[in-house]
Image (cartoon, rainbow, N blue to C red; front, side, top):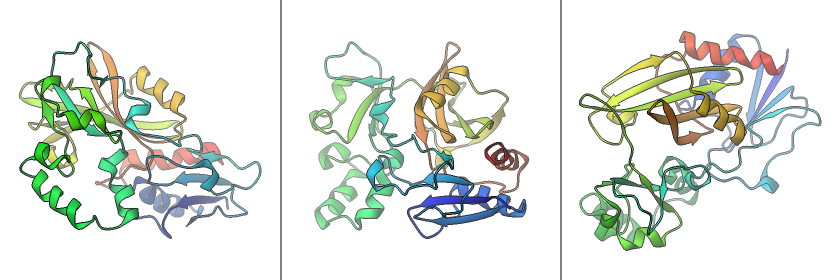
Length: 272
């Protein structure tokens, strides 16, 4: 049977990852799947799954000659590399803004690899819960929304690990909305989640629904960025989709054998 080789930073895939779910379905389909830092020498398909924002090409494992590597071109998913909403000092934007980390997933994967924060940093993180401006650190796992650029602290502009974007939420009644799409090869599905909190994410979600189509703008950005597998978050304004977040190692909470996830898993056949 064909062998799928997954290069992962750890010895195995954590259950939270979408690729962990796909791996289990592939094995149920009778496919062989191996996970490790290096690619298997007899692999028929390789998948790069390194949960870091930026990857050093010289540090990546070498795939067997002639074997396709999914997401091989996705080496930098920092928000600065694709954001169309970024605001710089002096820009003529007079609406609300949001302060974000440049690194994916609040920079948690990078922090996990460097270990526990120094004592001073831990103290600042505690202070950030009540006054992030004074702490000179964003609140844990959230992005501050400000009424205008004038409210952005000066130290934010000085740091290359943060960026400021126009805050352009999609609204429906009392809800803030965020759309997303999960894709693998030719298969994909979309969804929209709703929250009364300005920063919409799974933790603040109050309801959701599924979407029938992925906007052409999102499909085009996926191709441009070289994604074979991943998740994009976006909003729509005036019929136009605006990318907010691109993730090459998405996580998943839900039915691990749903029709939608199974459809994504079966799309691997297009590479074998």
